[in-house]
Structures are given as structure tokens and as C-alpha cells.
Image 1 (cartoon, rainbow, N blue to C red):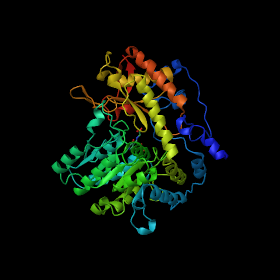
Image 2: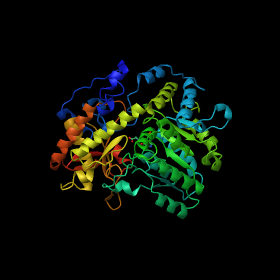
Image 3: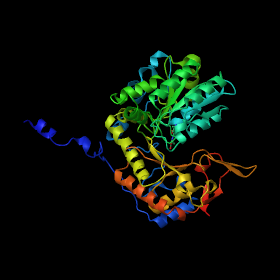
Image 4: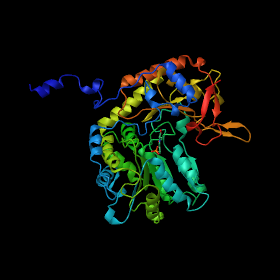
Amino acid sequence: MGFAQLVKKFPEEGNLSFSRPYFNHSVEFKKIFTPEERAEMLERVGLNVFFFPSEMITGCDLLSDSGTTTMTNEQWAYLHMGDEAYGSNRGYFLLMDQIREVFGEEFFNDPESNRPNAFIFHQGRPCEDALFTLMGKLGSGMIIPNNGHFDTTRANIEANGIRALNLFSSELKDPDSVSHFKGNMDLMKFKELLEKSRGKIPLAYLTITNNTGGGQPVSMENIREVSELAHKNGVPLFLDGCRFAENAWLIKKYEKGYANRKIKDIVKEMFSHADGFTISFKKDGLVNMGGDLFLKDNGLFVKKYPQMPDALTDYQIIKEGNPTYGGLSGRDIMTISVGLGTTIREEYLTHRINQVRDFGESMHRKGLPVMTPIGGHAVYLDVDRFFEGTKIRKEDFGGISLTAILLAAYGHRACELGCFAFGSYDRENGKETFPEINFVRFAVPRLRYEKQDLDSVIEAMKVLYENREQIPPVRVTYGKDLALRHFKARFEFK
Ligand code: F0G
């Protein structure tokens, strides 16, 4: 018997637990702080975790998965080869090749073609700003529907006099639903909107995965059906592609007919339905900074708005820079071109999504009220259910108390995305309006933490849950009436 046959007699790797598909290339030691020191600092910053110095975080920093990626050694090597030429730097061409390879040829035209369709910006939101500032000039009374607008997308749309409408799927709000694609757009509602508001919808959006909707994925069927419906009504479809690779992996895993398809092919199919997309590379681009707006060559968007490519180029030059570097340094563009190749590797994505899933499912098994199934990049804890049976009501902002105590007592930072972040205070009548959802989000940075790190968050959350009666409500001492108040407000315990 040959050695290759001999090894086959031993159980396959698949039945055992996996080690990570990468190893640490360089590490940074944390500084050690006591709970008392952290509590003192939190009091100084008015219990607002955004103001808490990251150097004092002894546990896991799960505030965001955006821009917090640990880059690979290949990315650091390419960073050193960055070309900072003012026009047509080396990275620009590498990025062009990689975008074509990952999303499709038609999303990045050659500079010789004279049909600009790829617009580099410094992150996701300036792409939204550019797109919606120009769309806003097209008329009044417009509506842009989405399966779940991210906050900056909504803010940029509304700042330009357009209504941003969420068409969440009904499964999203149903804790008993076992649907794997709770991030879908509600097709019936979309159909009704198209009929009711004919001529008022300049484009439709799908956010993959649906960050505002629990990080839940969107099925290929939904992308295709939304696209068909939109196109039938002369409406172009855009994707918010921040977490496109995670969405593709979840399609492969859970959607019928995709199990044997390559991630690369699934991604191409997803984007084949779109007429354009915005993307923050700070998520699935596996980098710390960068964004882009892409228009499909000959897609419905450029056909319908032929003036847009040139208008976008002007806007980009005025606000960011020459189109070949936009809002980025050449070295950053190099890291994106490498990151996009890594992010669609099957073994990377399998590890990534399983890590987030295991993290969330362990919390769920311990009785913590988290949204299930667990989404691609984060675990969402339902604050209302967490405090059920205690004295904490919505207006006590339990999510703020919880994030402050978790950070002080155990050194882990999470983010309130609920009654405070998405609620608002009316100065006239002194009343709060609350959103439909009330979450604390634990977003997992890419390639940064090990199982042991996340296990310690689960243990801490279990102790907090068992002692939830001890968690006091907060009073807002500054900023309850401000826009984007969660970034600015200060609190104290009542
Ligand atoms: N779209 C989605 C779906 C996002 O999640 C984000 C950012 C953006 C657009 C904007 O991108 O930050 O590069 O300007 N989400 C981060 C988060 C901030 O923590 O979820 P950006």
C-alpha cells in the first residue's frame, strides 16, 4: 500500500475541528487595564464607547468590522510597492484587472475607451454622496427603496431630498422564522411601490448582506427577481456590495443549486443582475480604507442617465482627486487589489463565516436573545428581549448601559444600534420616537481574533445576562436632540 492510500484510512479532516487557514504573521501586545481604570475612563467620556481609547481595550473590540481587518503579509508587501504618481499609478491597473476578474469585465472600462465607469473614493459613504447628490438634481418627489438602507446611505439619500424606503422581508422581524435569507427585499412591497410610484423611482438598491437587517444575506433568487421587476419598470438596480463575498458564501451554503458552484462564479452571477454598485472596501475588500462606485458598461443606469459618468468624474475630481487615484494613496489601492483576491478564497470565507456563526450560536445556546440565523459579519443581540422582565424600558436605553458595563467590567467593546442610535427626540413635544429594531451589535473584525477571544465575550455576556437586574438605566446628559446622536451624546447612570 502506498503512503497516499495509507493516510486515507485515517478519519478525514472534515470530521475534526479545523485549525485556522492562516497563522499569525505579526502580533501586537495589548496593554493591561483594570475594570476600575476602564470605568473611570468611561465616566470621563460620558459612557459613550466611541470615545473610549482603543488602547485601553483589554478584550475584543467589536465596535465595527469596517476598516478593522488585519491585512495579510502579501498586502503589506504590495503596500510597499505603492506607486504615488499623480496620474495612472501602478495600483490603478492592478485594481482594474482585479475588479474585472471578481465582479465582471463590464464594471471597469479601459481608460482608452473614454467611457469612465469606475470611481475611486476614500470609503463607502463618499460614493453614496456623489451618486445621490447627482441623482437629487434629477427632480423632486423621488423614492429609493432598499432591502435595508445602511445609515449613511439613508442619510445621503435624504440629504438630497429623496425618500429612503426600507422594504425589509417579513421574516426579518419574525424570531421564529428559520429562513436563511432574512435579508431579502419584500417583493410584494416592491411591486406595489413600482405600481404606485411609477416614474418616481430613479433606482432601486439591494444591500448585500443586509447590515441594518441583522447582517442577513440576500438570496440569488431575490437579487434576480428584484432586478427583473426593476428592469421591467425601467428602474436600474444598484447593489451595496460591502459584504458581497460573505453573501456569496451564504448563497453557496443555503440556496438550492449553488452548493457546487465556485464563490467566484456566484459573485459574478450576483453582480450580473446589477446596473451598478457602491462598495466600501473596508469590509470584504479586507483593507483599512477605500471605496468605489461602479457603473455597468451599457447597463440600464448609464443608458437612462447618459450624463452621469461625466458628472460623476467632475464630482470626483472636485471632491477627491484625479480619477485614477480618487480619494486614496497609490499604496492603499495596491492593498485593495490583493484583498479582493483573498476575500473570495473558499477557505478564508468558510473560516470567517463559521467563526461568526459559532460565536453567535454559542451565545444563543447560552440563552442570550440573539437574532438567528447568525448573519455574515456580526451577532445582533435583541435588547428588548435581553431586558424583558426587568425595570429597563426603551427610554432607559438599556443598550447603552449594557455596552458601557461590558466594556468597563470585561474590556469588550460592542455597539448600540437601536433605540438610541436610530431613535430621535422631538424638541417640540419632548418625546422620543423609537425604531422597529433595538440591537447591540457585536461585529467581528476580519482575520483579527481567535476563538478564545470570542469565547471570553460569550462568557462575559452570559454573566451580564444572569445579572441583568443589576444593570442600571442611563440618563442622556448631552445630545439627545442631535442628528447622528450616538456618535456625540454623553450619558450617566441613573
Ligand atoms: N454600506 C453598508 C452596508 C455599510 O455597512 C457601511 C459601513 C457603508 C455602506 C459605508 O461605508 O463606512 O466605508 O463609509 N458600515 C460600517 C459599520 C461603518 O460599522 O457597519 P464606509
